[in-house]
Image (cartoon, rainbow, N blue to C red; front, side):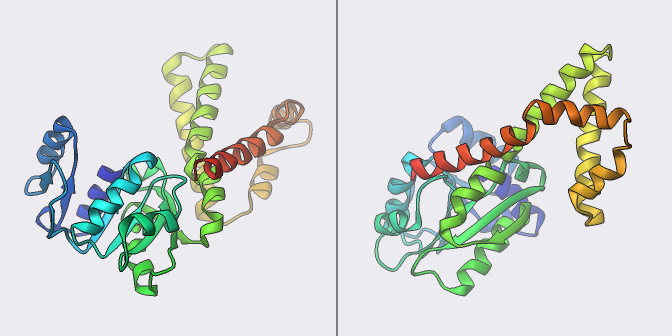
Length: 252
């Protein structure tokens, strides 16, 4: 996700020389240096002189240590994209005077089609949200929410791409089971998901209306929808969102 943000910022006019990355893995440092010529990639945080704005793109167990190190090195504003770690915990680790924001992006950010929600910690100012939105907006849609809703965002859009990928797996397998060659089943599945998402996005039409438009009474789609409903499709998807939301709360 950190690399996706780097690519998004570069695509929106930020030069590599304006950015600095700290990466503990030597192999990843080499990869980033090759991918972004001119980017300064460090093995560890400097003792001081860190840019005023920093993004914490680390796993949840590492957030506190990274925030403390960034605060000590001079960062005045932090944006965390780790799941489950609240702004209060990050503020406590970073130290007094460090303004904290928290976001939940998702993996389609890697292709500039992400969905993210951002919230502000207690010491953050309105302009800090603008800054965080400019960073996250370089790779997709950004919405502002209260922190109490971040776990729900995690359950829906943070984990949501995996639900879609699972649906894609099932559709591809089902296509093969009714006789389609593997490559054709894959191509039709991918384009169907892409086309349906674009239709939903670009027309602004409610999903239930779009579904009704393609579902003729007693037709083929009606038979398919009936099978999904009988199999508990709605309940299963809703349960997935609730389970991921609850897990995010537990991580926090």
